[in-house]
Image 1 (tube, rainbow, N blue to C red):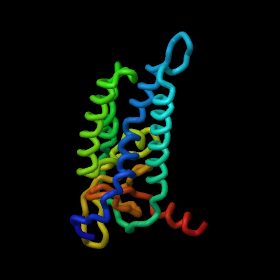
Image 2 (image 1 turned 180 degrees about the horizontal axis):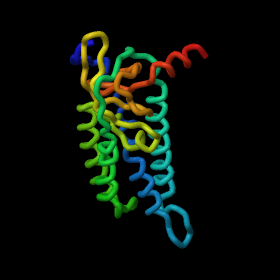
Image 3 (image 1 turned 180 degrees about the vertical axis):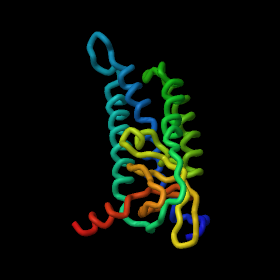
Length: 196
């Protein structure tokens, strides 16, 4: 297994990447909805926009969790080195959430600024294929691990998403999500799911 080459088939479809990207900002969407509540009526001041934001946040979170849980294929590899980088998933969202704590859903200028910022950030995440580096996955129990794994005599270094610690010398099935980003499933889990 050699290092990944430029392969357009690995690039996620635009709409799927957008949903995965939005899921990283679902806490921000939830904060915007909470801020929109009128303290007297306890209802959103902009009900349609608030409902849309909640729907998009819920859909995007469901999409990313479904995407990583559906990984069953891939190659069987042996882990030779592993280092936990999950802190990078945490730092991905927090600065942006804190930056927009006072966004007014009724201000079109503020909403346009937010859309421009998120649009630029999405373009970067899409081009670099880092939409799976996402704090929602950390909350769901996934870790981001910088590891080296080998298949036969060929070693590959990559970032790997896994919902369990990767053991040195352990056998895992890895599926490539994008260039140098994989999902790992313990080999025994794959075998047991195939038998069912």
